[in-house]
Length: 193
Image 1 (cartoon, rainbow, N blue to C red):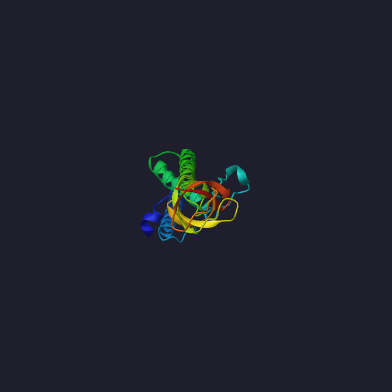
Image 2: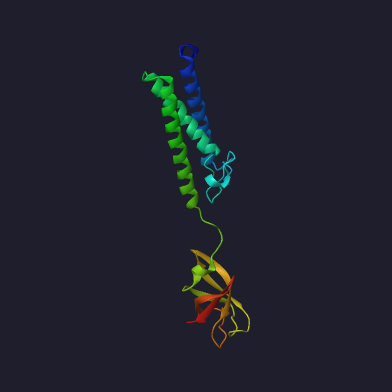
């Protein structure tokens, strides 16, 4: 290994060093991500390099984050090695390596942005219950006389939700109801079936 390294010129040593180090960091990031130890906040240990919101996505991702910078360095290092070994000069090696590094950096940024857009919020949106049929859990008084509770599927989950009747009669526990709208932020309006 020492003979191989010593036989490289200084330019190749720099490119190899950057490529090897960045690749090792990429592997560590991958392993940490697979085991859920990557922080999970979506922003990496993101820094914006002083360019602020111009490069930030709504999820907190930054174009200059740990992942994107490491991707740039890996592309830069290995491309520099390939270009120099192909017999091209240092100037063209740096230019091509910077170009490939930027492409990889942007690719990782867009990939992470797409992956984070697939995340779901754990918050239930009760508007998604409108039209669903549920079962009265706690008696629902007549319209304008208070609330009861129903059990209904909201976003694929069975939820027990406050409900207000829309008719003149109360609805007994165990009866089926249809959600017709929202009576409040966390209260459904229902009608008996």
